[in-house]
Image (cartoon, rainbow, N blue to C red):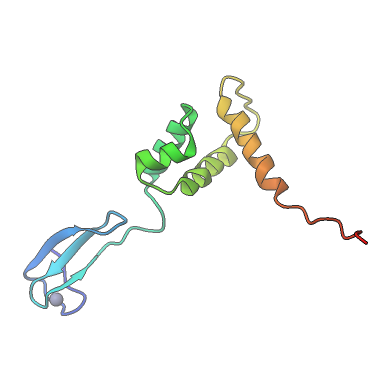
Length: 121
Ligand SMILES: [Zn+2]
């Protein structure tokens, strides 16, 4: 049974939909306020991340994955990067085109913007 954090009542606590992160939200009918007893930790559930990586390995691009899973495509990029970083380095997998894509991505991230040389007259 839930307890209202506002008035400490344990009665008349009803489910009231979900927050934008998917946590169960409750409404206290005693004081008529909403609360979320167990807000989800930062970010998205592991399941969503795994699904994003799986879709990526199937050749789905970041933006499409973002649309499919209703997440920001930048989050997808981060998860794929984390996945790649966690891969054992001793296992080259030539059958996985995603590695090539990731290398491009890393190159892009690594090159950033270069300052123009200050030797102008
Ligand atoms: Zn209350």
